[in-house]
Amino acid sequence: MRTDRIAVALCVLGLAAVAPAGARGESAEWCESQWEAATSDPGDGLLPTYEALLARWQQYAGKCAGTVVYEARLAFLHALNDEPEKARAVLKTIPPRASGYAHLVEAASLQTEMAEIFASKGDRRQRLERLEVKYVAFVRRYPDWPQGYVLLGGMQTSLDHHAEAIKTLMAGLNHVPKENRLAPNLWSLYRHLTISYAESGDYRSAIRAGDITYALKPGVTSDVQFMLSAAKAYAGNGDFDSAKKTLAAIALKVPQVKDAPGFLAAQAFVNAKMAETPAKP
Image (cartoon, rainbow, N blue to C red; front, top):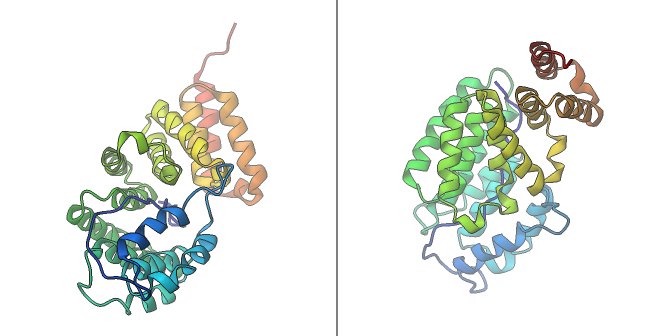
């Protein structure tokens, strides 16, 4: 099981709702529309870091504070930045049942709980599996919100629940309009699919998902789990040159990975697949 940070893409798709105005009279709908601007690609396929996005979003405090949308998104970003205490403090300022954006508040609360788990010591698996159950219930309550599927699918991938992850992520993708399914903010959906397909032995699908992930976010080549799964997918598909290059690339970017069990297992997998293939005459 992977218990490091779970990559999260910040989907801009939302549920229609009627919500209060902010401190300066801006509506919650307007503030939610600014989320798309804040999370947009600044150029060259470089999506903003969570830290940069937090700074961007805080600039809307003057117009959007008090809309619930602002506070829910702010808490979510604090959680992504490994600041669960700040996230909890923000969540406490939100009145119960204050708006039609309850799904954003619940997502922020769940993400904060995840940040608290990762900040804790000891075995996290039991706590993450209990949180997974909460995410399943959350997705059932808000089945039309694609981001919920991405969050749940990412957790399932991290817990090695790969069959469930693939089902969840594909359901989420089916809730995205076809013309938006290659939007940059969906990069982590394809990242999770790459890993779960590779670990499930569907190497062709893993390679396709991996190609999309890289096209949407070139920086994913620094993601150890993604690269190890990509190497296994290449090897499983008989492309040993790409498999070896992928392992070499991540070892160069993250030197300490060379002694990690996951890297050694991926290396052994590639070597085993190579040994199974008859030498060309």
